[in-house]
Length: 162
Picture 1 (cartoon, one colour):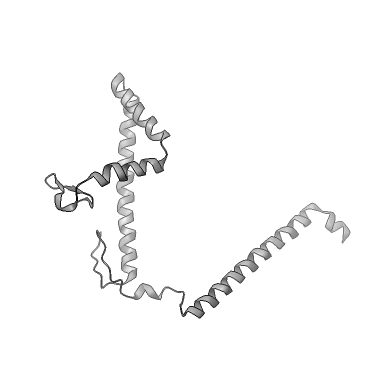
Picture 2: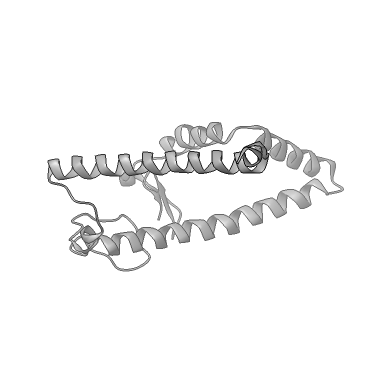
């Protein structure tokens, strides 16, 4: 037994087992505490709420939706809206990146410098600063939906591009 305790691999395995046991006990304690608190408040955990009526509308939807439909339908609408934004963003980012990359390789000095300033500015500016710029400087300066900018088939306002 003394030889076993002197073996580093055995000691490390025992240490790992103790840490895993402590973590499992902590999770068990927190789970029990959560269960008792929810029972005391008369609340339940589960997914049954997905079958109940949502009662609110969604601004834009890829598929038909109305407020009398269940929460599960709202989640599907949100998922599909997210997919639409993701795919559109991927296409636009690829196109902008391709144009900027080709412009950086251009023989025209002016085009190359404009692309260089664009790329270096966006690469070195933190994303949070860019998001704040787009929100406060661009989107909040757009007109309200009643006074939307009408470009034929497209209308631009604070509520988005329609």
